[in-house]
Length: 308
Ligand code: CP
Image (tube, rainbow, N blue to C red):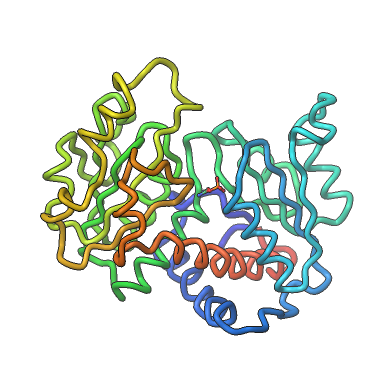
């Protein structure tokens, strides 16, 4: 990778994305074996700094670092000196002073990882910043698509749900577009972001046209915690008009792959029968998240001194 940090997929080249995905292949193989231990991160220090809740991202980074022999420390904003008024940059500088190699940051403000990265020597990984990007999620999603389909070039990837507030959608749109997939996003008008026409994807409010011939369907959670006002009258009306169900999927590609970044709200963005179907790779995504994060920690913690 050209930079010391992973802040988003918008600014990565197709070659950089592909090299991360390829680097995760041997780590996935390692995870499938009984003994997952390696020494790739021996003597390296990794800190997760989370200002928002997380299950998958935080735990998979911790698992990845520990499998590779790194020292892993976790800071939850709610129980740290951030509560005493310490700024993000000062927190980062203190972590630098403890010789931290990689800081993994989740923050409600878009651009927070960029601010931190510009003020610390450690590599910064964006683990989700507001509505901007969640690059490791998109990398694990694309890794899973490649595992299932081989080449994703020309494949129709439909993302249905809360596009407006989704950093996962944005990172997937950038990454998938660079690798040649055709992305369609679908949501009620109130859940499409302003300026969506400038993103490299097709946009529709018609769930039938979004699902027609889709090779991959990704559901997204309705992020009520980020919304002001109600984007639709009731959750059950959203589910009735936009929920992905087995009957709706009949017009998708025969072997359509079902994905979701989690956490899922069963019966809202997807029915339970779709979430648990044979075509669902939702838990495979979670496994692949560990492999992708192992590859990234290895790349960034072991990069040569003096590179940007
Ligand atoms: N997909 C994802 O980011 O999940 P968490 O919020 O649990 O980390």
